[in-house]
Length: 114
Length: 115
Image 1: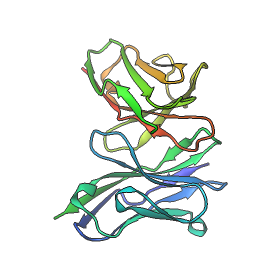
Image 2: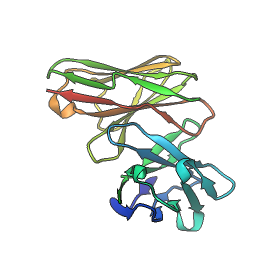
Image 3: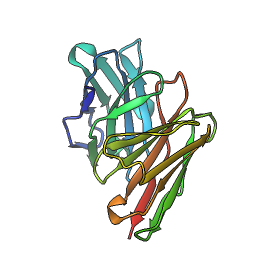
């Protein structure tokens, strides 16, 4: 069965430090992979997505993610974190054809200290 | 492009009443809409998938008689929580997609509080 694992429930980084949020997936075919960010009380905003091609994808707000098939991973990175990046981050894998069915990880809460 | 709205953004109701939440795709025709529920500090849980003009497909454990979903047009889906109880209090998020796309576009969510 398909699944998404985000091993880190809560991460705290200092402003200006680099960030990596981990995501591992289980899926039999080539996955469609997504990272979303959610601020408190808000909906989801798409940061970036991977469908095919270059395994390093660039997203909004300076985020990037790398798809590593051998490790079944799609980790999110940012070289320098800003205080406004504090939020909940969800990794998701798409499956089931062209209608975009998604499975979400449990999320990683990012706190940024000054 | 690909904007999805939800209305209302926040609703408070009394136990036993019904509440309707609207989800609209503003600039595209949504052949499929999804309804999610999110408890505090948890991930999104898919409740149901609806295709325009047909009955919704509910996930296991979701009561279809309690959570009525209608997708009568290509730009509007509604979720009605019938006979709401305090345990139905949650954050409800809809999303929409169209044929041949591989992603969903999310609405801003609706906070339901049942007193």
